[in-house]
Amino acid sequence: MTSNLQNRRLTVASLLLLAMLLAGLGHALFPAIPVWWAGIGGWGAMLILLTVSGWQRYRQLFVLSGLGALFLVWGWWRGGEISPARILAQNILLLTMLYGVSFLRLVAALGQEPDAPLPQGRLAFLKSMLGIHVLGAVINISVVILAIERLHEKGALDNTGIKVISRAFASAAFWSPFFAAMGVALTYSPGASLYTLLPVGALLALCALLVTVLQTGGWRMQHLREFRGYPMNLASLRIPLVLAIAVLLLHEALPSVPVVMVVAVTSILLTLSGLLLSQQKRGASLNLFRGHALQAASRMSNELSLFLGAGVLTVGLQVFVATFDDLLLFEQFGWWQAGLLLAASFVTSMLGIHPLVSAGVAAAFALPAQPEPDLLAMLCLAMWGLGVVINPLSGLSLTLRSYTGLTLRGLLSEHFLYTLVMWAIFTGLMFMVFG
Image (tube, rainbow, N blue to C red; front, side, top):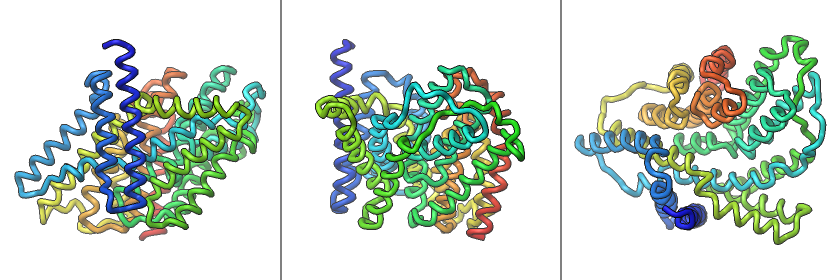
C-alpha cells in the first residue's frame, strides 16, 4: 500500500472519530439520537486502521472480541438476546472522552520553562509528586512522557523518580473525571455519583501519595535530600485548574449530560482557547489544532482496539450471565467482596490483562447482586489506579520501560508492597464509607 493511500485512509479514520464525537454530543443533548450512531464512527475508524496496519498489531481486539462473541453465542443459545446496537454503543462514550482529552496534549507544555534547572531536595520531591499528580489527572500519559524525557535528559531518572512518576500519575485515576478510569466507573456502575466518587477517590489518592513518601523518603524524608525532581510552577497548573472548574460547573448546569461528554467537549474548547491565546500566531495555532484532529486515528489506535474489544467482551458476559437465574457469584456485594475482587485484579494485572477488562468482568458479576453503585465505581477506579502500576503491558509501564529498561521483576519489586498496602487501605476505606 502506497504512503499516500495510507495517509488518506488515516485521515478518513480520523474524520470518523470526529463524527463519533459529534454523534455522541448529539445523543447527550438530544437523547432521541441513538448513541450507537457514535459507535459506527468508532468501529468504522477501527476497520480502516485494520486495512492500514493489519490484524497483527491489534491482537487484543480480536482476542477480547472473540471471547465476547463466544459468550454472546452461548448466551443466545441459552435464550439471551443479542443487540447489535448495544455492542456498537458499549464503551463508545469512553472513547469519545479519550478523543477530546487527547487534544490537551497541544497545551500541555504551556507555562513550562524548558531550560529551567532541575530542583533538588525534599521540597522538590513534593512539588514533583503533586505537580505530576495534578497535571496527570488532566492531560493523562502526556505528563509522564514530559517528566521522563526531562529527567532522562538531565541524567536524573533513578528508581525514586520512577516510583514518584508512576504512582503520582496512576493515583490520579482514583478521582480524576478526566481519566478514562472515571468514565469506566460511571459507565459500568449505573447510578454512581461523581460528587461521591471525587472526595472518596481523592482521599484514596492522598493515602497513595503518603505511602509513596514514606516508602521512598522515610518517616522524616531523610532519603530525599539529593532527589532531583521535575520543575513545576503555578503557570503549568492553570489549565488543569480551569478545566476542572469548568467541568464541575457544566456538570452542575447540565446534569442530564454524561460527565464523559462534558469532559470531552470542554477539553477541546479549552485547548482551542489556549492555543489562540498563546504567543503563537493564530494561523499556526489553528493548523496545529487541525493537524491533531486529522491524525487522531493513528494516535488512538491502541485505545480503539482495547476499548472496542473490551466492550464486546463486557456485553457478551452480561448477556451470558443474564441467562442464569441462579448464577450469582455474590448474593450481596459489600466492602469485603470489593476487596476480594480488587485482590483478584492484581493477579490479572500482573499477567498483563488491562484493568479495563478486569473492571468489565467484575461489573458483570457484581451487578446481579445489586451493589451500591458508588462502591462498585470505586472498585473500578481502584482496579485501574493500582493495576496500571503493576501491569507490564500498560501504557504507563511500557513508557517507563522504554526509557529505563525496567524488567518485569524490577517492576513488581518496585510496586508489590505498595499495592498490598493500598489494597488494605482501600478495603478499610470501603468499610468505613459503605460498610
